[in-house]
Structure formats: structure tokens, C-alpha cells
Image (cartoon, rainbow, N blue to C red; front, side):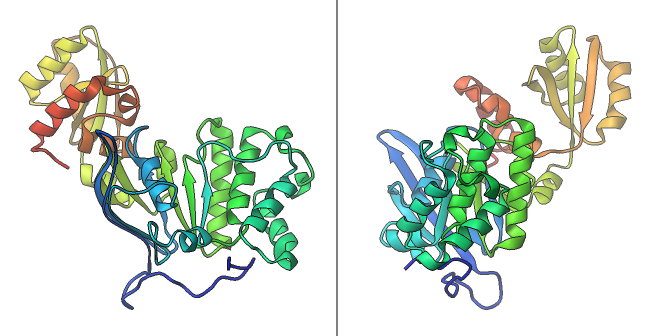
Length: 347
């Protein structure tokens, strides 16, 4: 039976009595599509009540992993357990314990919001007597109760995404999966979606697993797994990941960028590369280094910016490129391989 609205069965998660309960456990997970290995032997756990983020560019293996966890795809090898159930052998039990918001909308646009939610409630076996109060609860949570009788086709993109979140919560799941929850939305709407998600954490006893390639969204997570080319390269809190870099990011635009890259290596021993249209490198105490750069650099400098370590810097430190550059395709593979060789194959 699905969990009734407002009530949940006892925790099915694993705990040794000394630490947090493990809601998701993944071990040696592999997914191949023919010769393509989309997920390459990943391991991680997610604790009850966490907001856990998978951060990486498109094609990194994020959506493939979430599909396996949600029983929508079979793993080639390895195991995945969600809410105490094996996603390969206990599919129905997993599905009763999860809510899912897909990257692309799955709402029926010719139905009203209420009709969409009632159909979902019937699919998940929510008792009829609690459907209406639970529906009002989740629609109030995302600010849509006053539009429950409107056709979904009249909703904006942001409203549809909020309705999908409400639908995913209707049957009171233990885990809510959000696959790129704000993709295609404008910055203001993205911000409002996150307001609703953060509010959700204070109202519901729920664990959130999300995929994203937006750095600002990853900052909302309790922990982040950075995934690249199907491999997890780092897992920790956002602050711990940024602290692990220990250097500032400096970007300069010059009269001759390639000559600047060569001079940085020859004169200062700094490895630099082109990222986002600027010569980019990392250095300790960047603000103190900049005056020296202007006084000793032969190539004329047109502009300079210094930033404290960010999650993009973390991603670049482990993969050799920024997420924006990685989204551009395979053209950066040579640079990435060179970075890995120079950094001792950091993975």
C-alpha cells in the first residue's frame, strides 16, 4: 500500500544505531549502452533528510543514475537500494517510497491541475478520504491552490514545474528525485522554485536527490557528488569542497592570450588555459599576486578578475575544465587529459 497522506510507515532505511540512516545506497553501479559506458562503477550513500546533489555537465551520467534508482532503467552491474529496497528486484516497493520530477514535463496539459493530481493519487493508491486535504496541502505549499481548476495548458513553465513537485509529494514519499528541476526556466523562476524546495524541507520528512549543472543550485545541497564522464570525482559539502581548493581563481584578458599562457608557465610556473573566453589560472592569495602580474608581465593585460574558490573551480580542479566548457562537447578532451597527467591523474 502507498503511504497515506500526512502519515508514513516506519523507516525502512538502514542504520547501525550510531549514525544517520542511509536512505540510498549505491555500490559498483555500471550502465552501458552498447560500447558506451554512461556510468562507470560509482559508489555513494545518501542519508535521511539530506538534500543530495549530483553536479555535472550534460552527458556526465546524472540522469542515467537517477533512472536506475527510480527503476526506470536496469543497471549493467552493481547494486542500488532506495528506502531499504533493491531497485532491480523490488521495483514496486521502491516506487511506493519515491516521488519523481522529470527533466521534461509529464503533466497532461488538457486536464486541470486537480485532475492531474487526482489521477496520480489513484495510481499510487492514496485513500480517497485523504486525497483532497493532501492535495490542498501540497498545492498550498507551491502556491497553486487558487489555480487548481485551471487547465495545465494555461500554466507558465515555472507553474508547471511547481505542480510537478506537488504531484511528486502527493503520496508522501520518503525520497523526492528532482532531475534538473529548473532547466529551461528564467533566473527569477529558478529562484522561486528553490524557495519552494527549501520550504518543503521544513514541512516534510523527506530526502531530496537532485541532478543539476547549475552551480548556484548545488549550493543549496547538504552534500554534492561531482560526476564527470560517468565517474564520481568528489563527494562532500559545498563548503568543504571549496575549501579543498585553497587557491583563488584569476582570469585575465590580454593582447595575446596564447603568449600570456606561455609566459605564465615560464615566468611564474603557473598552468593556465582558456576558459569562458579568458586566460584562467589558480594561485594562492590572488589579490596579492595581481600587482606583481602587472609589474612583471610582458604581455599587455586588458582586464583582470579575482574570485574566491567556487564550485566551478572545484569542478575544474578535478576534471580540467569548467562545466560551461564541458557542455561544449568533446573539444576539451585533450586539455582535460593533459590536466589529469600533470596533476597525477587526480580522480
